[in-house]
Length: 586
Image: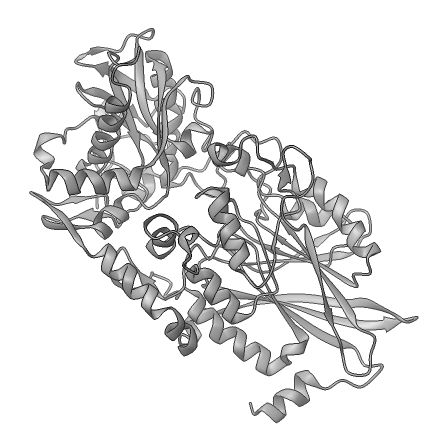
């Protein structure tokens, strides 16, 4: 399409005609600028042939603006921007932007020309000072109507912004954008926000701010909500407000025209929800994650008695795999990318035999034993000289990444980063033997109930659907547990009902004493309530130095130089059915 054709189609307007406006949206970018997998040191690819990154999004955005006219478009995001890739991690921890470097996500989003973005829960992972620095680097506001200052109860970030679009020869149109984030932040990032910020519900705060936006003259109200559309919780997290509340906002808060949904990593081209008070339809759309899709919210406005009114709303998504990366974004951030590629591929040690997470979700693996070793040793060192120093130490780990593998031979930073892909920090808590069993029973809900011993495929056994996990329990909510100096061993009988599956639970070769005391190495997500595992949020904390587990593993390998799985790998747990070993076909 030529510029002249684009102007005729999207840029020219005769007074009295309906006005067509397009709001473009991304969400859950998670530090993705390039179509690159830093853990694999290769171009990103998956079974659906998705592409990722803001460099791809930039090309889509440019095409939409050319077609519709830049003056008829807005660009927004629904949160989770600065965490998720080694690129994001590097500029948060290795060369933090608080030292003056422009965050690559800020640089890319500024180049693209975003108008607003909502806060995601992962924005708080690196602490409020780094988040404030990132916000200051942006040419647009970070919105969070339900991120309140704990002392004053007032918004700690701008709750909304109103942008003006001026059709030729017509009264300007005021486009209101409200930002809402996830109340789970108070639990998941408790160490970073407690006493500083509070996070009330999305519905509750939308009811406060949407009327104010309308009173200020907003002709259109669009919400960028870092909250999924399913109304489910995060597999049982005990939150005071619904975690995934976007549909509830549409149903219960009058005056909203459309919602850009985030947080759930789902693809929703268009979902229509009827507001129960007005009977009007609200459009919801979610563009998957990582820049794989770009949502388009299409609005048609007409002027009635001198006021603009929304006549119709629809939405769709564009696929990033249909376009090349934008050359200007590649040039702009190529040096940052090269720096991080060099960092993650630096050799820090060696391993005497390969370790893989490919089967870790259904059979004991040396890779998870290694995580537990590092965590357990770190907690033991931290509690030396305390009253808990003599207690036996256990540790929990989850199969976060099925593709993770530590090769035989040289080990790089990216090998370790792939093993532990989340920015979790380490804590130590005390548990009784009875609490250990209750914890393992919760974890065992990950498995589907079966009869017989198989053979079964892994998919027939794992990711069980439950009342709190309607789409299947994710791998990261399956924890295995091991002992540091002595063996903790158990069997999971998946022929039994959930809640009564842990059998032959032994410590150091004897049945575990329900009253015995243990120190458990655990990550901050789990300890703060993520996954709703029993006992963890109220258990006494004996260690919390905000040490990132991934960096602890990197430091361990750097210090030891050689990883020898034979020195720590053992079979702590097995799957059985009716007491007999389960056969698994791969």
